[in-house]
Image (cartoon, rainbow, N blue to C red):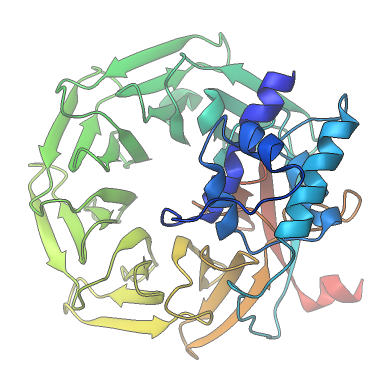
Amino acid sequence: MLRNAVRSLFVLALFAFSPSAHALPDGEGKVLVEAVCGTCHSPQLIERSSGYSREDWQALTATMIDLSRNREMEGQILDYLAGNFPPSGNRASTPVDGDISIRFEQWQVPTLGQRSRDPVEAPDGKIWWVGQWGDILGRLDPQSGRMEEFRLPTGAKPHSVNIGPNGYAWYTGNRNATIGRFDPETTEITEFPMPDPAARDPHTAEFDAEGIMWFSLQGSNMIGRLDPASGEVRLVPSPRENSRPYGVKIARDGTIWVACNGANCLLRADPETMEVTEVTLPEEGTTVRRLDIDENGMIWWVNSGLGRLGRYDPETGAIKEWPSPSGPKSHPYAIAIFDGAVWYNESGVRPDMLVRFEPETETFQSWPIPSGTPSSGEFFGGILRHMRTSLDGQSLLIHQSGTNHIARVTVEREQEVQK
């Protein structure tokens, strides 16, 4: 439907990190672009894009909007975008070569404009995702490529999904202050509302070894705990004002670690008492989107505010950082320990780069994350916001929320490449 197609152009807003003070340039098609894009966001945000050729603008918008029934409108939009926002180097990435080869597999989700994100693997091998802007929960069979979408309560705006006890899919209702449980067998949805009106935005969640869900509430500045057996939800505030709890990981000893997206800190929660303590990171301007924990218990985190990769040793308190290859404005975002290395992405540059860091040698390698396939015209225009490994640890699950793609990354060994 045209309404859904128009709505899905919201993704252009994802290219911006701050408001623009300039209007779109004059020219034929300006009014149309303002009307279409303005349905979901300020058209001024288009100025923040790195620019594309007409062919790439067409490939990009086709992942978000279906104008196949109105080619005249599509042509005017593409002519205007390509003419006024051609390719530029204003946000160019800095690729790093290396010896590792990787392979991307991609699937475009059925409903355009949904902002698909946060893929996670279930024990049966299916990959689940959420469509945040479309109130969608999706399931992919990577063997057949078959995808199913399930409608969630209107206004849930799910931010993430996890597979919990009994194989249920659990999502965070980021806009309706709930945690939702989806039964794959019956498709029944059970909502668990927040017990405090101030707890308005469940964000990222993880299950501990006992099957308890721990989750962050970014804007509410809280950390939450949900017991699936009883349905009880408990909440505690962050000790740091405006710390904006974001990414969540759980250590082997059960300690809950949470990233601070609004301050230079990490948060540590006791699983028994829910007492939260702060680990202050050394430099002002540091903000942390996400973190992960390696097999030695080291906390690895992305310094999104300053464009760095960081490591914290809970035993000694030692902190070390490395500049990300694309510099201080690269805005590292997602992170995962995978294949014996630290992987993360640089979301503030174009292309969005997938970065591998080898701890032993302290060396980097990076690859552009495609937002399309060679058959559909490979281009680079999305943003990766969360990454996790498959259950067998053999692949990395990623996405491009800006272009409605779910993807899987595998490392190609030398013998595989020779074949």
